[in-house]
Image (cartoon, rainbow, N blue to C red; front, side, top):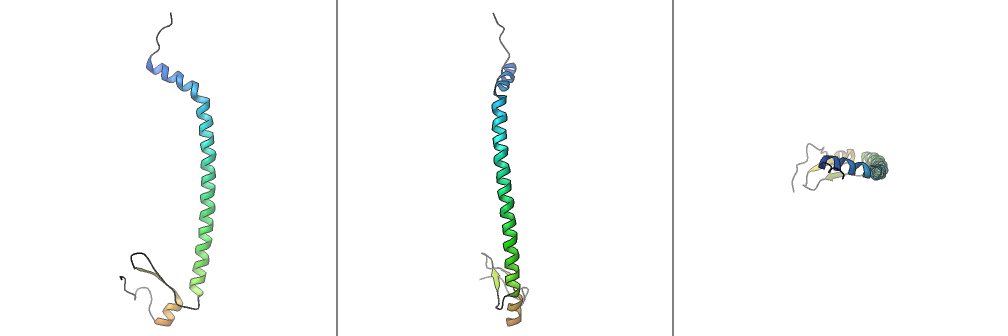
Length: 96
C-alpha cells in the first residue's frame, strides 16, 4: 500500500510533469515578444523619420502653417506664418 502524498508534494510532482511543456510555451512566447519588439522598433524609426520630414517641410514651407489640436489649442506656427501675419505662438489665443 502506497502512502498518500501531501497536496504540496502533488503540486510539485504535477509541475515537474508539465515542465517541458512550460519551457516550450515560454520559448514560443519569447519568440513572439521578440518579434513584437522588433516590429515596434521599426515603427518607432519610421515615425521618427516622418516627424523629421514634417519638421523640415513645415519650417521651409512657402506658406503659413499652423497646427491646432482637438481642444482648439494652437500647437505650432511655422516661420512663414509669423512672417506673413506677424504672430508667433505666444500671440495667438487658444479656444474656439
